[in-house]
Length: 245
Image (tube, rainbow, N blue to C red):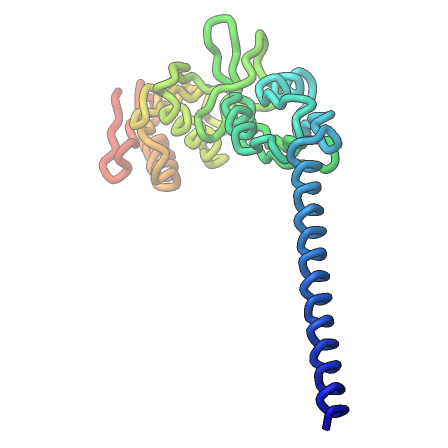
């Protein structure tokens, strides 16, 4: 009887030791994990091991690359994890030449700025300078000479005229060939008043960029009806066009 009690006590003591060992090992493992996590956090977020050493700009060339870098204001030496890529992107997006931008970390030492440049749809003269203008009516790329391989649009350059310019671009680039080959110049007076100057000397009040096909059809019909070229056609309301002798 005494022997049985002794054996039972020994088994109970052994199980207790195993539980204590398991608890100890668990605590040790937890300490190791926490220490590793703290070390990783320090390594990534505070040390110079994974800091910014380079800013890469893709999608643009020449002086625009330097302009993007300067505008991005990415501080060298700061840990990559602490760079606010959203703020960087917002700053770069303010550049007129930038249509879209994506900023991301390229571990271990780089910030990459991917730029989608604006695409010129037309050129606008402003005094002695020239601007490129995209389909959204945004002016960019000021130059002393006209941009190559894009049509010329006569339009206001004030900041408040962006929508008017966009309308002008839409009309200019959307004209069917049957009309485009007759046009010498496209002029923008306002969002609702775009005009075509024909090679014949006549002016066409085109209006907005809506109902292009209807306006083109009506204009060609009016031109066929009048042997002598009038001073102006008005197809801004294609259902009720008019001619000014």
